Each structure stands twice: as C-alpha cells, then as structure tokens.
Amino acid sequence: MKKSNKTQYAILGMLSIEPMSGYEIRQTMKQSTANFWSESDGQLYPALASLSKLKLITSKEMKKNNPREKKEYQLTAAGKTALKTWLQQEAETHNVRNEFLLKLFFGANLPAATNLEQVQAYYYRAKSRLEKIKITKQQVQREDKDSPHFPYWMMSIDYGIQLIQAQLTWCENVINQLKKMKTP
Amino acid sequence: MKKSNKTQYAILGMLSIEPMSGYEIRQTMKQSTANFWSESDGQLYPALASLSKLKLITSKEMKKNNPREKKEYQLTAAGKTALKTWLQQEAETHNVRNEFLLKLFFGANLPAATNLEQVQAYYYRAKSRLEKIKITKQQVQREDKDSPHFPYWMMSIDYGIQLIQAQLTWCENVINQLKKMKTP
DNA sequence: TCGCACATGTAACGCGTTACATGATTAC
DNA sequence: GTAATCATGTAACGCGTTACATGTGCGA
Image 1 (cartoon, helix red, strand yellow):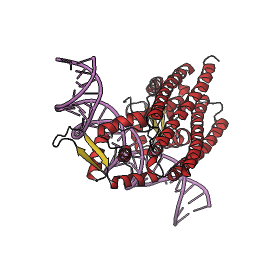
Image 2 (tube, chains in turn cyan, yellow, red, green):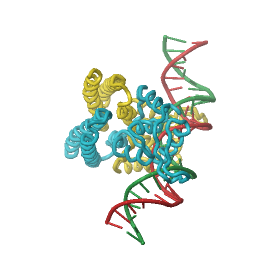
Image 3 (cartoon, chains in turn cyan, orange, brown, purple):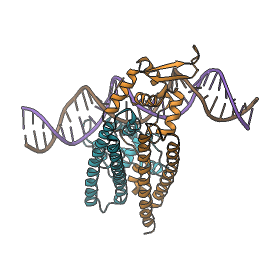
Image 4 (tube, chains in turn brown, cyan, yellow, red):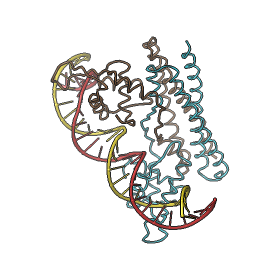
C-alpha cells in the first residue's frame, strides 16, 4: 500500500470504529468527517477490494455468490498495525484551493458591489455549514458520550466550528469595507 | 474553455495585474496566493499554450524561433471578458481534505501522548505560516499601497491570518486537553 | 568553473469525480 | 406500483503532481 493513498487509510480508520460495509463507510463519512474528509464511490469500492487483497481487511459475505449482497468488512491484525503506523506519522499538508479567495484576490476587475455579493453568498453558506455542524455536535454528545472516540470526535468537530466562526467574523469585516467602497 | 478548468482562470487573473511570463506567474503565485491557490509547472505551461490558442492571451516573444526565450503574455479583450464573466459567478467549493484532522478523528487508536505530539507539530507549522504571511502583509502594505488591487489583496491576506489564528487557539485548547488525558 | 536562478516545456502516473449499470428491499 | 433508499461496482475522463529534459546567464 502506497504511503500517499489516503483513501485506504481512511477506510482502515473507519473500520477501527466498528465493522462496516462499504455503504456504511460512505454514510459515516458523510455524517462525521464531511467537513475535513470525503471519498467518492469510484475511490471507495476499488480501495476496499485492494485492501482485501492485501489482507488488511476481511469481509464476511452474508450470502455466497451474490456480488450485490452487503459485505461487512473488518480490520485484520495487519490492518490495525498499518493504521497505527500511519497515524503515528506526521500528517502531510494537502494543497489548499479556495476559489472564492482567488476571485476576491482579482476583485479589482469588478465593481465593489459585485464583490460584495460574492462575500455575502460566502457568508451565508458558512453560516449554514455552522448550523449543520452544531447539530452534529449535539448528536455526538448525546449518542457517543461513553465511546473512547468521544474526545477526539469533539476535537475535530470543534476545529470546524472555530474555523467557520473565524470565517464569519472575517466576512463581517470585509462586508463593511466593501459597503464603504461602494459609495465613496 | 471549460468552466471547471480553474488553472486557466487563475492565469487570466494573474495577467490582469500585469503582463507576465509563465515563470513570473509561477513566482507571483508562490509569493501572493500560495495560501489559497497554487499551480504546478505541469499545469501552467500547457494552460498558457491553450489560452493562446483560444486567443484569450497573446505572447510577445523577444527573439523569434527560440522556444526557450522568455515569453511575455498579456490579456486580449476576449480574455478580459472571460475573466470578468468567471469572477461574477458564485465560487464553487472545492472538497477539503485535511489529513491531520482525519488522523485526530481516529486518535483513540493511539495513546494520548502520541496525539499530543501530532497536535504540537501542527501548532508549530501553523505558527510559522502565520509569521510568513505577516511578512507578506507588511511587504504589500509598503509596495502596493496605491494599487487598485490593494484592498482586495489585504482582504485575502487577512483571511489567511484570521484562519491561522483560529487554528492556533484551537490547538492550545486541544493541547491542554490531551495533557490532562495523558496523566488521568 | 561551479552552482544557482532563470526559463519553458513534456511524459507518466495516480488521484478523484461523474456517470453509468445493476438489482433488492422498503415505505407510501 | 412506484419511488426512494440500500448496496456494490466499473469506465471514462480530467485534474494535478512529479520527474524529466533542455538550455542560458550570472555571481562567488
């Protein structure tokens, strides 16, 4: 398994929570890690097959000879070791691409009023993301209070909350500035 | 030009600042937009060629018949129009992938002390990014004070500063938490 | 004269998304 | 009965990085 193939490690991590099918991994990611990690179908299923071949996970098929049947995957000892080894290594930084900021950087090509609209749209999108993540937080606080994962899940949720709040504050400042530029 | 090919728009934007060679676009991006946008050589040069073919930019070669000679590109009227059209459209959000947060999410698989190390490393990297960006800000304040781009460049720089500061605050909280978990 | 910065480009490869294909089960 | 959800998978395509290839000019 190549060091750079994060999809496979993400799967191993998910299976360290509990045995799951591919579909359940997808659902769990959408609910819990969507703010900082996601995978598409086209990545997920081939990665599961490849991890199986490497004996890092095993599947228990419910009914034999039915490829459409739900497969429950679980970590092998080797898989758990591979996961831990990866977790211990310093995280690599992925190149960030923020199209909104790129456009703002070139904002001088447009009237201030148009840029204002862009920032306002960004503001409202951030606000709705914040609401969503706060609901997730409450849900985790209710349902996973006693899980060993609980403190770490809270940390990753709070990261999202604090970053979005910083974005909102920045937006408010920029909106005021642009409103002044609009009517000089 | 496909809507989704952001590289080409990034180039048009850069050339809206002033005529530049491919190399200069690279350098400018590294200095000014690195915190939210970057391009690699393998993207940049083919995109320039493709924009040329579309007549959105034109090049003035210094010496004819020398392909290694520096080419200065500038926007055509069509290029400027294409840029503005793109700028007016609402920015698309790019999927974020933060390997650090993904690892922290699976932190229960490791001792708290190991996770503490990861967070501390993240903290110091954030701190050094903050220092770098603050230097950039001072430089822009000195050199581009009177440019029409100035207010927008400041906004995009401040975005970076505020986001990194939020990360640092979060790190401090998490570090304290993990230290308590270390010795229960 | 040696190494570095300037300068442009190509090829190979892997990452990642989207669309497509299939079919079972469940809820209305 | 029909729409949505569960469930797994493949194919095609484009994005993006890395490594490679080439050559100039300049300063220590």
